[in-house]
Length: 150
Image 1: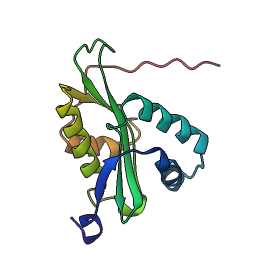
Image 2: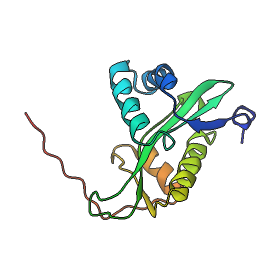
Image 3: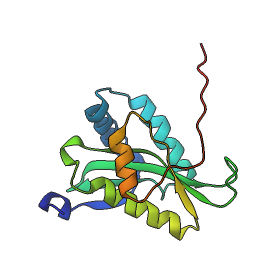
């Protein structure tokens, strides 16, 4: 752990994190999308506010991971954790921010009775796939299907 991440604190998402997460998204993707993040954060705050997390150093948000526990979807009847969105400040990558977020989220899911955790990764995002593989995730039997609507 670097000196920078020695002070890393993982905490539950708060509605006041909207600006910081919007800023991180813009830093990562180059797009300013406050309306997208306002809807997403509102959803996770209503569904399972303790499941979504942020990482901060000296009060500055440097990463986030959004997820929840669901059951009865995709043929998975048991409580199942879902990691749906994550982001780490590009300046902080390689310093275990994502790993610390994931470890905290997995512990939360385990404590709430989840028996497995799922996520979806775009096959063009090899770095994200490698991140999840390093955490012990494996490809699953679920196959995503999509139909473009014109």
